[in-house]
Image (cartoon, rainbow, N blue to C red):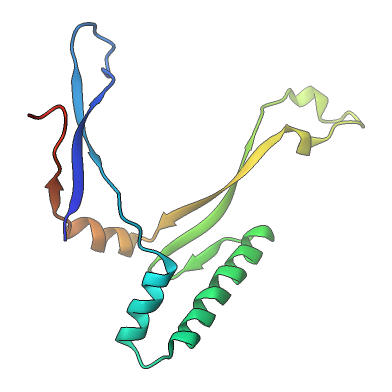
Length: 138
């Protein structure tokens, strides 16, 4: 299998005028869903579909609970899920104020995923690419 990519226009990295630049970008059109994962596990194992669905559903629920509790979710040889806060900077002089509410400076929370070194090494050493048609290359 090959990673599909397309040649697209991009901004000039140095800011020079009059020169158009292009770069390669991965094109991810298809979705590999939970249903697909369950089906593949069922075909490769002796577990029933109901058992696999129960395990995958429990994994999602426990991972969500752990993230909400401030824990990192580490799936060995797969990767780590962790939360990240987005917030505004504020002057340190306002911290001692009795009415200071640090939570009011938080704009949002993200869930991030960082693949394990093994997963990255296995994936990135065996990839192939396939160029898709592009408006820039005719």
